[in-house]
Length: 266
Image (cartoon, rainbow, N blue to C red; front, top):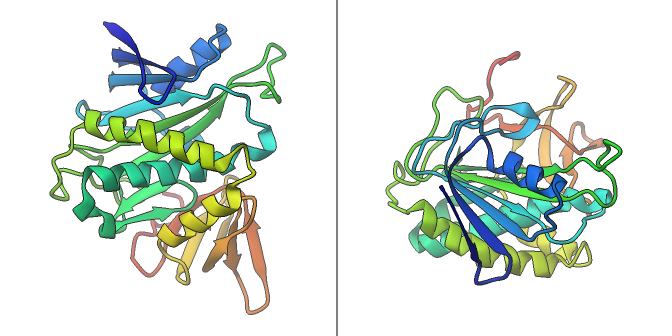
């Protein structure tokens, strides 16, 4: 069963009882000619996914939503949207539960944490062009998963959900706030022209600055050092020695001092 409507901030909203993945559904529609902006929202996902091909546990009652952006985003700027999306979701949760705001932080690049435990995930993906590449005109999808009433256990990074933390917030209420917050932050970003302000706002909400972190890179390499900042492209800046700073464009961050670092190989 599906329903379609026009969102108050522009763009259509398609609501599904179940799909394999809201990101996958948005990408299929893009490749079939849908130009967006289009939100796909599902009550259930059978094959939700997170970054680096991981499965995203999708229990009913949590939020599963993806936005097919309405305008092409240059590949070199696509990573900046991780920070736009994270800020928007942070603001949406603050609007839903003002008493939660002081407990929320951001983890590079786009996780929202409650007291250091992950409550959401954001995944950006590009559609394939006719030639099979993710080129300049490929559509971009931003997917949001928010643990509203349940969360997975035995995860590499500690997880939680809003209900567990004492906040009974319906997934629909989170989505309604996300609609307006994302539209506002997207306008502020202005296809990269406003990223400086986005970067500053993200850093003001970031957790772990000045702490020792471990970063697992996509190739399996590990980097340990002090979380310093992010640069003007959104890369993570880590001090790995007294005079050495390393820029990291992709990886999984763990806070060493907080005891959430899994053993090697997990």
